[in-house]
Length: 408
Image 1 (tube, rainbow, N blue to C red):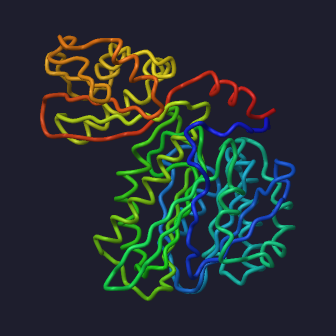
Image 2 (image 1 turned 180 degrees about the vertical axis):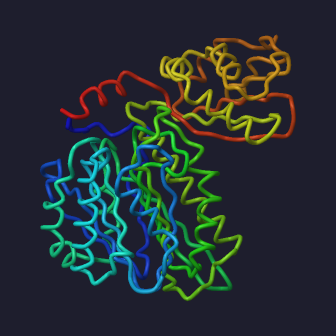
């Protein structure tokens, strides 16, 4: 695989200082699954009683690790839990061999850590259609066990990267009944980003105490507001997985607590937007705000139609304020729209209204605005109260270069 060396111009200044979450330890190794000279496997071991919730890709060609995790989510929270992730190989479209690989890895993790197989969750990310060399992972389990540390979450974020140009992390602390609860998460993702569940691989940890079914409901609801509102290229991965783990180590019950829900959403949204900022070849981060739709659902349909349009995305890459392409995307979305009620803005610049260009619009102003790195495109349908916000990036030649060379 071609090395990705240039960090996205939209990347944050550096990896954040994430707090250690009581009840979870991390380790990483170089297993040589596909990459050479870098870590490519991470292990997280969680204390007994940890609740684990998850959301996954709805792809019809889901990878073997995804199917295994889906079967295990919702099971008992007794005993410890473990998460093992490899990069470089997706273990997807590998038939019965893929299931064998999952079984071999989960059993090896269980043997090394003492975690029941039913509480071992795995993820794989990378090239599709090639057998996973699971023996290379199994051979590193003792080293992983020996390296477990509360303070290695950044190492874990780096080990799960594929075409990512920077590791992604986010955290927040929240006060509940006078006591502090911490949430910290990591993610990987850069291309094949158009989820219908979560996105790429995401692992979020909290020391709050939340019962599994309540944690699952909370995660599913917040996913719809965060990871389900981003797209880089309209392609849904075979391997998308998001696991949320509540160790309960703080002793603070956060079930249904509004402050905790808000804090969780902030971490999820930050990670989701970092994925977009690392979109393959991206040079622009774009927020698309849709209001006045017949329903929230329609608003999201319109927003994603705009965000996924190659014509819109290439115009943004070229810093061309071609608002006609926005009109086109709205018209093709399939959701309700009325040409003569539409309003379109680029930032604070009103571009079009009532089915026609605004009389005050000056293209030079819009062209100057499009030169920025962070852009807002606003659309009001004029039909109702429905609204939605989605996030995307531009489409450049860099995307083609990365994906044309992906398996080389």
